[in-house]
Image 1 (spheres, rainbow, N blue to C red):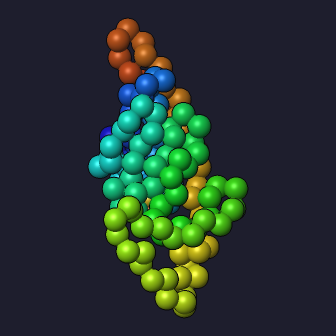
Image 2: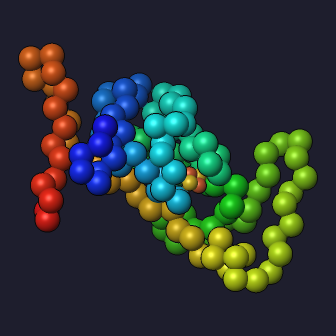
Length: 124
Ligand code: FES
């Protein structure tokens, strides 16, 4: 769903319905293109996996970088593939310092069978 410049992902997880920004907390890819398994949504861009119940990364993106607490994680490759060389330089430094953010949640309620999402007004 899009409201102005706000893209919202409404997901029916195993623990209930949740509304978050439809933007990966890593580099903003649309999570609605990913797959949901239980409460975990997988981002198609760098294979990060995020728990929509806790907001925590379950699997860091292949690019590595910082988790929400600021802990560093190295780059990684899916099984069966050679690791990409991490050539030192500004790009590698940017990868290393890119931080996975926490989700921004929007209140959800179901009233008379209708799912309602509280979206902030512009300027809120
Ligand atoms: S943009 Fe989603 S894991 Fe990188």
